[in-house]
Image (cartoon, rainbow, N blue to C red; front, side):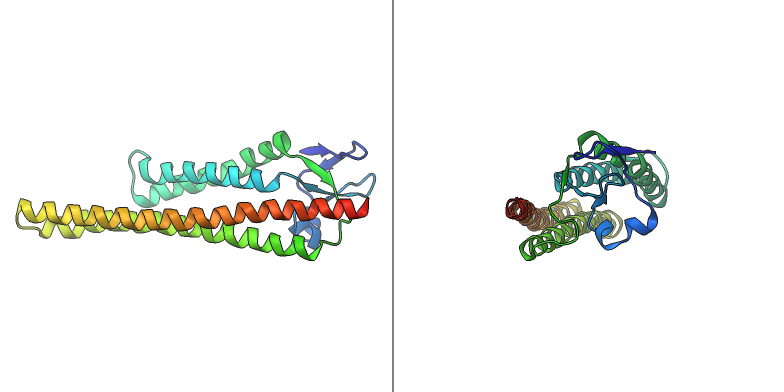
Length: 209
């Protein structure tokens, strides 16, 4: 069983708790309770690990979906899905065990209003940012497919083909640039909210000291 050490009493704590504990109120927030001393723990660098894993996984899936040799689009999608499942059961636990930094919470059952507010901003901004980036990539791929399958075959002359190509490339560039800018802006907001969230958690500990 994958376990990590409690920073308070050094007891072993399961990385993945039972189903009931995982979907409890505290489990949904990523907290763990030490079975020995009863203290509640939380990943101090959970946001950094989540973003790093998400970006790495997104890059792998993007490469697999577009550059996997042979097969149809559904075949490449299947390969990307398998890679996502395999990495979810291997890479993610390794990152948590190797790089996770757990801290003892001053009060495992209550979060300050400021901490809760910044948590919501952090999660919502990250979701919006990744969704925008994904939609931008999908839009670019659809535009390229439309150019190759529909527009170019209907062009009668080389001049018409050249005009269509340049217009499509301009549209793709503008679409991707706008999506990239909006997605990164949302992720920056999420990162700033994560910093504020951490400051709110530190303030809780200072108040309890």
